[in-house]
Amino acid sequence: MARILLSTNYPNLYGLGLHNLEQKMTEHLFSELRVSLENFIDCLYSRDGRFNLLRTFHVNINKITRSQLIENKGKLLNLRCFVLYCDLFRNAYDESIVPLLDRMLNLEELSLTFEIVGRNKFIDGNNLKDIIDHMVQLKKFAFNIHSSIDLKDQIDLPSNENIQSTFRNFFNGKSGLFECVCAVSLFDERPFAHAFFLRIAQSFPLMKKLKLVNLKPQNNKQCRKPEHDDRDCSIVKYPHLNNLDLFEVHANYIEQFLMDTKTCLPYRVVLVTNHQLLENVTHNFKSDTTRINCSKIYYLYSDTVCSLPEHVKDYFFNTGPIMR
Image 1: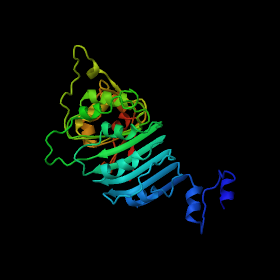
Image 2 (image 1 turned 180 degrees about the vertical axis):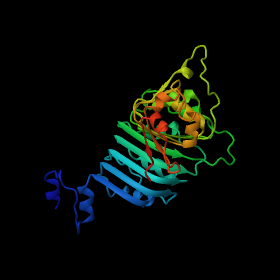
Image 3 (image 1 turned 120 degrees about the horizontal axis):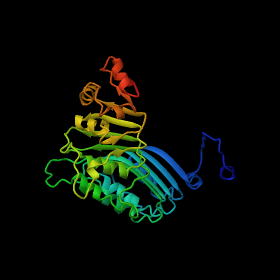
Image 4 (image 1 turned 60 degrees about the horizontal axis):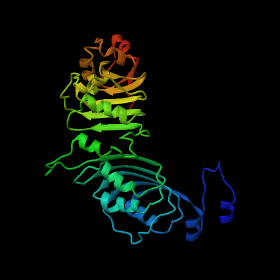
């Protein structure tokens, strides 16, 4: 069996069933493993020395909680690519994930996607640097991490600027430039200023999808120009944006993206937002300050809107209902 499998490549093979194979043979035959697991303990068992020849490991885990430790803590020197997707971490990041990643010294590609709760601090750039600093062969690092903390008994909460500063010089002095990130979600209980959106556009130059959740009004809606800094007056540009979700925002942020004095949108951007707020911001779809950007937008309206008048349809590049 081993001679047949190793003799050549099978580029058109899409399914393979193997039966009655000895465990040692399976461990040495395969260099890539993609699995979906119910819990993290199964993931640990798969990395306890039984598959030390794996070079690529993709794992999708339903939920990770504090679990028992695996005695084998040897280095996983053959592993070159590790992809982890998990719906929810609960009190397990520092105890389970970090020790596992510390064993992967020769990784060239790392991808982490998960939501984490139960930690008393946000995951920030310093935490990620601690993980990748020992991975001297790492060439690609992608992450999409949603970190939530309990506000109870929290006194000194970090600001957006504090968290962003931890990502400066993240990769060889690139000053927070993330060229591989295509989808960004922004949520906060404090207002976003115009300068914040400038930094987002600069940090994620290839961003295609942007979701904003913020119900707090902007503090400084008007463009202001400090003596030695014109950032706050610069028009924000998103050249690759094709999907904009402003459904859970204050009206100020709809203004932020639609007014041509603040933002320049590319053509055919799909917009999802609250129809009543959109009507107010555009002055019943007659405002000239929002007309230019709206003429580039494919507006998807919710099922609470029966139909759109012709002057509303003409205000946008195109319109249509959200398909449920």
